[in-house]
Image (tube, rainbow, N blue to C red):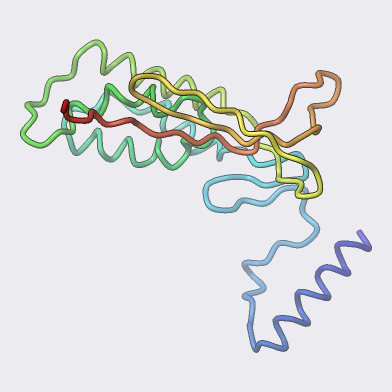
Length: 178
C-alpha cells in the first residue's frame, strides 16, 4: 500500500505541475482491479469485460449486412483475446463485399459460432514485464496470419505455461495472378 501511495503522490505532483485536474467521482484508488476500455486490468493481467463477451455470445445470427457489421465491430474490439481470430472471421467477410447478395449460409453460422466460443474462452493476457525478454510466436495459412508476444520466462503458477501478452492477426487478401 505504501508503494501505491508513493505512486499517487508522484502522479498528483505531475498533475499539479502541469495544471491537470481529475474528477474525484471518476477516480478509483487502491482497487485490486479496474475497468479500462472494455477490459479489466489487475496484477494478474488484462481480461475481457464479461458483459461485452456475454453480449457477443447472446447475439442472434445477423439478418443483414448492417447487423453483421455491427456485431463484427464489437467482436473485433475484443479480437486480442481470441487466438486465430482473423482465420475464424474470414468467412464473414464474404457477405460484406460490395454488391454481395445477403445469404447467411452454414459456413457463416459456423464462423459466427466459432468466434463466440473463442471469446468465451478468452485468456487473461499478461501485463508486459519490460525487464524480461519476450518471444513472438507466429503462424500463417493461405488466408490468415497471426502472432502473439509471449512474456519471456513468465509463466502461470503451477503449470509453467507461458503467458500471452496479446494476440494479433490479420487476413491475407488475394493477390492477382501475374
